[in-house]
Amino acid sequence: MRTCLGTTENEQGKYPGPAPIIEHRDQSGVGERLAGKAAWGEKKAWEEMPIERGAPSNAFITVRGISTLVEQTLQQIESTGPAHRSTISRFLARFSRVTSSGNFIPVIDGLRFFAIMAVVIFHINGRVGVSTPIAFSHPLYTDLFHKALSTWNIGVQFFFTISGFILALPFAAHHLLQKPRIALSRYYLRRLTRLEPPYIICMTFLFVLMLALHLRKPLTTLSPGTLTNHYFASLTYLHNILYHSSSVINGPAWSLEIEVQFYLLAPLLCLLFCIKRPLVRRASFLLVAVLILLAQSIFGTLHFVSLINYLHYFMCGLLLADLYLTNWREHPQLHWRWDIIGGLAWLGVTPVLMYLSRYQNYLIPVLILCAYAGAFRGVWLNRVMCNRWLVTIGGMCYTIYLFHEWLLYQFYTRITHYIYLTHAYWVNCLLQIVLLVCPLIVITSVLFLYVEKPFMYRDWPARWVGWWQQHRRQE
Image 1 (cartoon, rainbow, N blue to C red):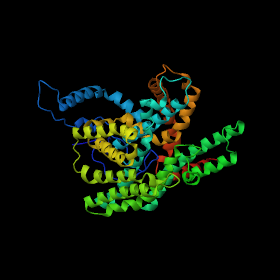
Image 2: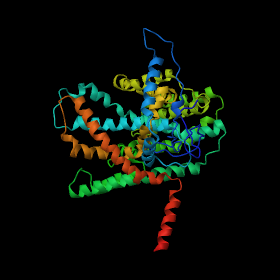
Image 3: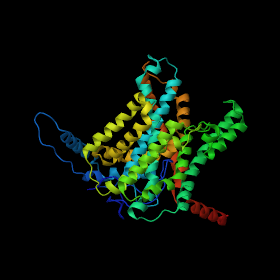
Image 4: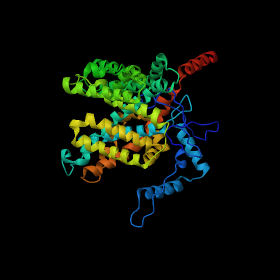
């Protein structure tokens, strides 16, 4: 039975099948990923999932009965003509990431979609809460809706777990499945050529813009020289260490510094996959996470944000990679029980952050692990995560993450800031989410085509050199 966990394509690109594990770079900027062209052909993997029927009952509609009814409804919605599907596929293909192989795990991009949307909504909530022309009917510190969305910066930790999963896959495949060894030189070079150009372009653009506006009318108390120092500290992923704060050039870049620290350490951590006994190996992942948490509680954290603060989330990604390669690839059957487990985990994240924040370092990694397991193994959660629109947007999350805060600031302060309905906070916040998310996705999609996608080709440096040499000969 096929799932949409990983697919490959034949020469016609229509028949998905199990995907081999290879090394490739992710598109989110938050870790390496398995990559490949999605098999959005005429026959989708989830269309072949058998749904077991429950025993008929005159008194109650069983969970399986509801599942069957929804399945039939969705199949009718999806039964559009081939020409229509072809047009949509060509449109989405233009905004899909470029890969160097035919391997793909659409669930991962679906998870990235929800992670980046959580971060975006978190920042919209912050904008509406601190900068609005109206007085709300209730103070924000008593508004449950505002308090709930204020916890959605947890999307960053969702990215950390995805990064741990993706970066661990090629190393785990080598140790557990006897796949080819990953050359460290190739591993680090790919991260350099894949992530650095979009990051440098974004940071340089924001720095030049900030410097030009500052020279015209001082925006902060920082001098041009100090801004330049912050720029180079951010460019070298040292701003957290040197200034003990987020970058003044681009605030969300703080998490990318954590990612880089993990990239450097990942090959060493992945040596744990050398342990042959599964229980001992998986216990070692949990042991590293627990030791980090105990060290934080006993000795405290450093004066700056570093990998030490978040390593337990990456270790959950390593554990997930172990399960994916050894257990789930051998037994890929989906089951609605995983929908219940995963659904409860997704719903439990916000309440834990609101009311049990003291224990969040222990509870949230467990909830993320269960939520991701549900996305891989659940019938309906898996289907949602494999939606091709969500997968396409999730594949652009690196560009969205780099530019979203600046774009939201421009949209909100210049346009939507003056649009409101009532004095209820939740109504106005939802309105701003609708007004801001749509243009944000449109503009970042264009930026993705010109800022990120050209550097997704593994051989882009050679292509550019060849183009330059040909241009010089024509002159």
